[in-house]
Length: 124
Image (cartoon, rainbow, N blue to C red; front, side, top):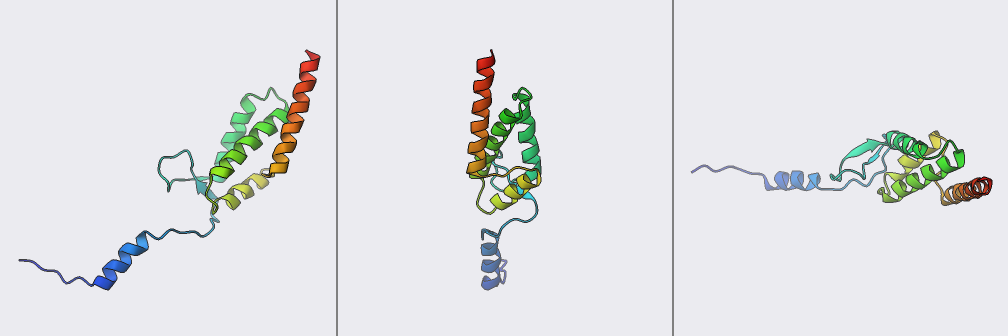
């Protein structure tokens, strides 16, 4: 019969440390990938914004107001879905690209898009 000497204090300490959640703010430029099924998958914030820019550009008809409104809407939805510790990184990456992720900026973009759409509708 084999027996092992196990130090209970060490074994318990190691196993419990593994499950402790880290709530410190991220500073590495990565945010949680909300499209992934695994909760610990991360993606670079600037890559997420680049993909959003490409997607917003597809249907804007070369009108900046439509592009900006779509982009800010997508970015705000993504921002709301992120955990609190990842939000400053995402907002910082957006500000480096020239976007302010605030409700006021989003509302302003929607107003400008609406004005443009009214103007385009009256022309046709």
